[in-house]
Image (cartoon, rainbow, N blue to C red; front, top):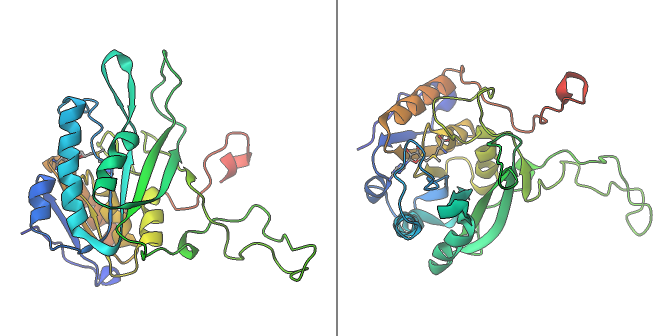
Length: 289
Ligand SMILES: C[S@@+](CC[C@H](N)C(=O)[O-])C[C@H]1O[C@@H](n2cnc3c(N)ncnc32)[C@H](O)[C@@H]1O
């Protein structure tokens, strides 16, 4: 069984389960339909320190096995969010992983709800093509009756005081006073060296990216699982909002850091970039913060 840490009062009722283990083995121990949200960023098969580069065919077969087990774990009202970028094949050819993985999810009868564009400013500078500054999140649900709440993730409207100027609702506010739908294009800084969440992991999630998914696709007390957990960013996002967090990774050092982050969260010392904080803009006073 996976290790558990002691709970401090403010996190009473939430459970963190993190283990250094291959995800297929980890998932086999979990009950069917137990996860409301499965969110992850798998290796992109581009030769990062934690992966062995294989043919695209081998990579897709391995992904298909993991996705199949994730579908077993998914709650009937649950969501799977698969965050991917590009695989770079021979001759520098770009293979968009969401396009090649889409059919694997469809083969399991899942339904695509959004293909979210995650845009960020920092990354490698390409010289023989345009530099990549976005990745995608494929959001699938198991059924048509799925958990989804917009209110906790609304963002400020551009014109909050705007009112209807004609028709039966003349004079009334035209937008939702709680803010607007954040749309399917998300501008959130990626975790590079100057980001307050940076650890030794070469490509960790910004916690605020996962918070938005957790808050909109789960309720308090639900379980969130990341099968490629890295340094535990998804588990952190889940615990921050009174959900249970599950994760596994094959690198012990990452799991150790994930536990350190969970402990820091629980004793109030973990620093995360707040959701909704504007992206730094050098043209504005104090960067717009
Ligand atoms: C893109 S990173 C995910 C980082 C994570 N989102 C975070 O915020 O730290 C992919 C992770 O998958 C892990 N991994 C690779 N193969 C795995 C497997 N078979 N089972 C579990 N984890 C695996 C790698 O060690 C790596 O940390």
